[in-house]
Amino acid sequence: MRLIDKLRRENFFNSTEQKIADFVLSYPQDVIRYSVQELAKMMFVSPSTLVRFTQHLGVSGFSEFRLLVSGESEYFYQDPQDVISTDLPVKQQASIESIAQIMMNLHKETLMESFLALDYAAIKEAGIKIEEAESIHIFGKGESLLLAQEFHQNLLRIGKNSHFEVLQGFQLVKPIVSNKAAALLISHFGNSKEIHLIIEELHQQHIPVIYLTSNDKNS
Image 1: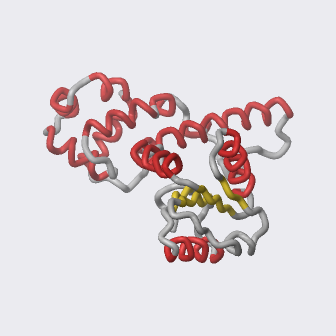
Image 2: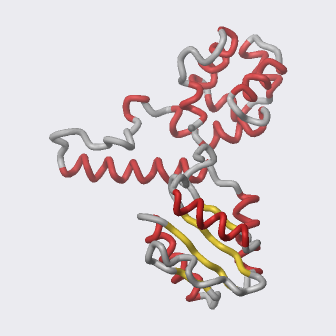
Image 3: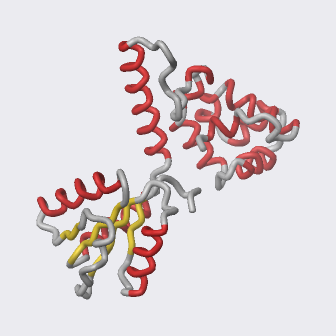
């Protein structure tokens, strides 16, 4: 969930926290510009109260909170009614022009949320695993197979020893014999029986798994 969505939640804060949330929503640029001490004075709260508020939102502290506000700055000036519903983004009787605009904005929002959710340390570690592996084995399910196949082709183009089986049920038929193998598994929800069986088999073979999934909240 985006930080701004947490700040807009009703009945989530006590009275002091709600005052802080309202200030951040109204003056996001001040949050980016001023120190925690200066902001606390402007909000008529103590700096420790402001830090505890950020931790209540699941943030490590004020520095990370300020980075998140900066990264989501464009959302603070967007009417909540204008936020696109990802389940039903297009309303009935919408024109072709409005549908095109909605799809462009939806992709823009998706890219922004993906960017804000990046774990750079994990990305670096995954890159090292792939670089050091003598063979890379890629697995996917459903629509994730398309992403898996594209990544497989890209690895082949740069000379990596990549293996990919499209057909379900055949993905682990061929044993992985390399001493320095790595596996990349792509699954949006990560809750299918097939995915869990693949992970269990890879663990039994002591093969490190890079798991690319939707977010850190799913199973």
